[in-house]
Image (cartoon, rainbow, N blue to C red; front, side, top):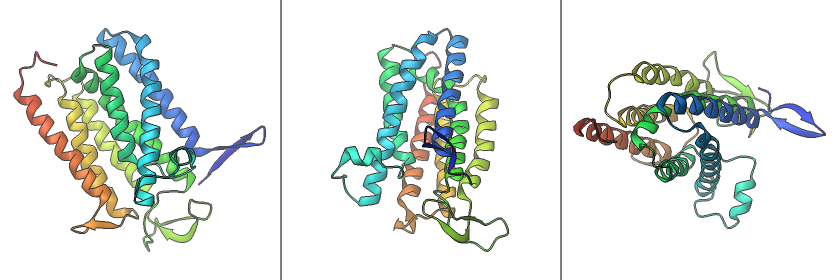
Length: 250
């Protein structure tokens, strides 16, 4: 674990920030290639990426603050500037809305764009989780298993061995990526691959929550698990509808 990688002019450069930046570069490079491959304008990628990154950050911060405080934050700006408290589902919601709005504004085929970008999503998520691991946050409950890890400089610090839930999720992204990558050039209905991504990510998050420090809210499941089930349900419904539509539709 290396929360601080190096210093620039006396300012600490944290591992999670570096990983988020690298993930943005990977997303930009992949999206440019996808645009060229599909005959879309690569110049549209950077403005769209900036919009999505900002929207994702705002959603992740605000939803994290809502979950933490149990209400809308009294100081929204302060919530945005906090060094911790990102929410996956908050960022997913606002980021997805930003993609939807931008693609529609550019009059691009939404289903085809979503399918083209779907395979890179598990790679980006794995990079985010690696940032969490290096920063020592979002780990799981205590464990006596031999691969339990301590995070003495974590957020919060712990000297008790805990489940490295971040590494579990990185490993789970492997089969998700493999599935999407092998099907990216298949003759699937428009939008089908993106909905399969929703299903797989929903299932992954539901399973991963058993190794995280969530608190049950209903039926013994955490809020994140309920949201994961919702994501998987949306994916299954969308996948069914995409299969029922004529393939000429976007």
